[in-house]
Image (tube, rainbow, N blue to C red; front, side, top):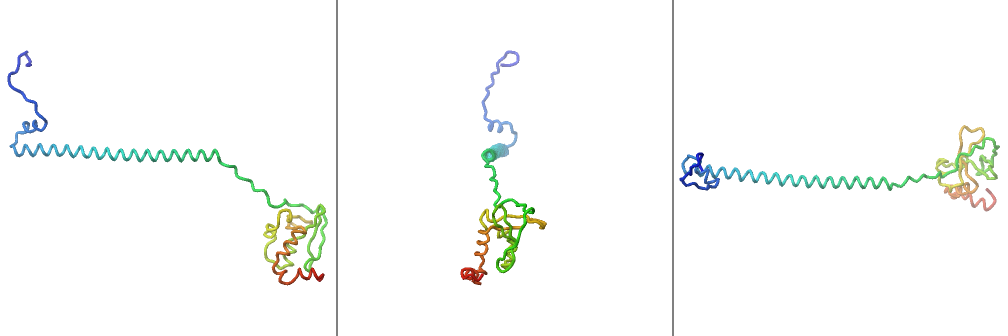
Length: 198
């Protein structure tokens, strides 16, 4: 239909884009063909680039999703671990607390041919580990020896006249310390006890 209601009698055609480009260009046939082919090649390359970008974006989104999932699992695991965390076990003291015996008198007993400080507390005999080790000529500290004695056989006792408590052992602890001495065994000390000579 024309503007004033008339009808156009000339024929008209439906053209594809490629065909339209051939008609629209006023170059010679060879130039026109090159233009069309080049245009189509550019469009094809653009489609490939777009598809590649889309593929990379999908891979990135997949990686981000996996990372988020792993972080979520880790967060949940930490939360569960905190909820089920076992309270730390309080280590019970191995040794008795310090015994303040400054109000009690102590004496000396002869062991290994020398005087050893000795005190009786609640009808239990205690012997100075420092004196025993000194007479045995043992360089190991009294604290280290006390830790090797079974519980209840060693204690820190504060004697009158001392500036700080010292390690003492019971009669059973004294036997363990002396029988554990290789030097006393090699010197035949325990054989002398049996013979009544020690």
